[in-house]
Image (tube, rainbow, N blue to C red; front, side):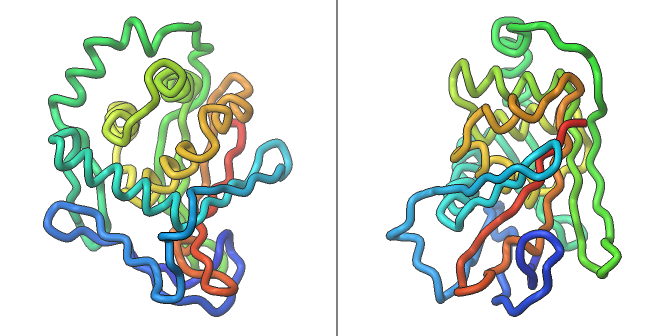
Length: 223
């Protein structure tokens, strides 16, 4: 996947950034103009309407990519490419482990059973691409509870998401995990009003914006 725009649907000059699969691993190239060695994972949050916009820096993206690659090395997920897109799929071992301890971790409070679980890619009116991830109240609470109980891993996030939603692309999972790493469970809790959350991500926001700074932006709204 390559990106040539800034976060959201703004248009402007940017460097090309790729998130591709090489030998069963995600490879996020970043840009030559940015060094992540001196950066710490960080995010900027601001309210928009009933939800909020979260922008994570390149260091957070790199950390998320490394976490999924480590999960692949550990046999928790499989990373593959299909039709030019990167995907992350949990292994049977990950799904079995989630099932074994779901009673004590996932169901620690009562869900409203409201909202939908879905994922789709849309073409914007400007010809760009956006990915939309819906997580119902139950799924949102499961992820939040995992983060609160043991700290969620990349493999666990992939397992929970894949167990409820078909076809989620690696780009969306990487951006979401990067945001959760920096912001924490409050990102979901504060935007879940009882029916889960809707997360809108623009793959082009992996591209370098003004000054060569790498950012990934997500809009988090209540369903």
